[in-house]
Length: 93
Image 1 (cartoon, rainbow, N blue to C red):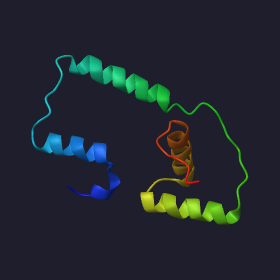
Image 2: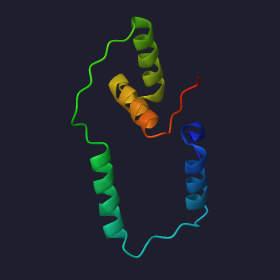
Image 3: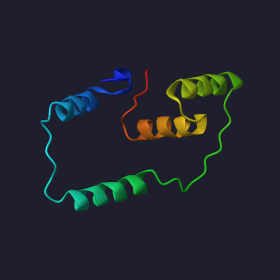
């Protein structure tokens, strides 16, 4: 298992089950795959633009974190926003 730190607890559980041979394909695999692919496409469709102004310091930090993750900083920022509004990233107040 390489890059373990990149997986959350649920993803690790799934990966371990897969590697142990505990997961079996569903009977309607093609239909399920197509349905999930369509849902993912609709979810991640980028059809709106957002322009914001942030401090140089925050932008540099965002770019550094994106570089650590190996993604463009705009993609990283969009991912953070998506995680926050979907409840998967919480504020540390």
